Amino acid sequence: MMMLWRQARVLETGTLRTDLLCSLSSFLSCCERRDFSGISDVKVCFRERLRNGIADIKADDATSLFQEMIESRPLPTIIDFSKLFSGIARTRQYDLVLGLCKKMELSGIAHNIYTLNIMINCFSRCCKTCLAFSVLGKILKLGYEPDTTTFNTLVNGLCLEGKMSEAVVLADKMVENGCQPDVVTYGSIVNGICKSGDTSSALDLLREMEERDIKADVFTYTTIIDSLCRDGSMDEATKLFKEMETKGIKSTVVTYNSLIGGFCRAGQWNDGAELLKDMMSKNLIPDVVTFNVLIDVSAKEGKLKEAREYYNEMITRGVSPNVVTYNSLIGGFCMQKRLDEANKMLDLMVRSHCSPDIVTYNSLLKGYCNVKKVDDAMKLFREISERGIVADTVGYSILVQGFCESGRVEIAEELFQEMVTVGVLPDVMTYGILLDGLCGNGKLEKALEIFEVLEKTLI
Image (cartoon, rainbow, N blue to C red):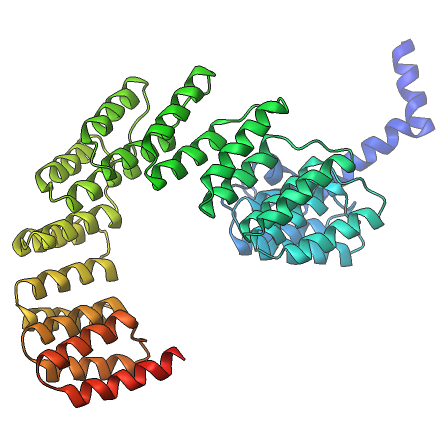
């Protein structure tokens, strides 16, 4: 009885009553959009949609959901808008997020540090760090304190734009603002430095992390290992890989892909094969990238039997080949002048609903020209445009060389003129091929004429 009296008093005084009225208003807002003539809802309440997640949301759906939120009474909280914006940002629709943020602000809903950080992230991902820094200014103007997320997002944006020195300076300034750089900060900088080709500095940064008691994660280690593999420094890459495992940091498929590709490119096939076994022994399933690395390197080394075996293995394991897989195999067969097998692989590619691209056709053009079947190459070249694929400088250059080497330099000249007419710019290689062909066929005056054009182009 006493409890009922207390509940009645709370309702009278307004605290619980206010909560109940807000809940009722929210409920009615949802009910307005429901069709009670049937069992199912015509439209789900925005709160329910946000609660259930908005993964892979489309632009139109996101805009409709935002409009529903803006029209709701009482208005949703800034936390609701944060959930919406972060969900859309995960789908990489950054411009859409920024547009909706602007509309929210114009509707009288004030930003908080979370929505402002989302805006910084979107500008940074679009490589518009100048605008991202203007949002930082807004954060300070509104009296908010930039947090580690704010600085990490800006550092990442600078790294994406290749502004590594500015990123390092900003990371140092974090401390002045009461924020400590963490593994995310260093991860972004390490990734940017490796992309610039300065693996040595990336390793120095890794050691700096250790000195500051910041534990590097698998992403940081894998980034440096991949960079070392691309540099051909396999001993150092292996050493770092073992160091990572000794520290209890578990490797990923990406880590192994980098190492396997590095060993195969270095001709250390046995080491690559051992790593593949080691990878599978740890229940890490090879993915399409793993097989593509093995197939591509095998094909380029002329080991087509092994390349085909890897292809069969990926099919057996349920890994679907993609355009890179087929291009590697077709390119390998063409390099070995095995055109019949290359065309069979092309047919298989099409039957597997994998669309050939310009790289596919350029490999076949090269294959035909290598066996002096330039007319077949020309026929295929004409078919390319009919299939909606635009010929590029590489394709034209292959044909120009093919006809020059076949002694049919007039057709080579026509192709050269055609590529200029259709807007495909010849490169230095194209000019070199044509000049060589003209000189070899006694057309010195024409060669000099084209050489003068080339000189003017380069000035």
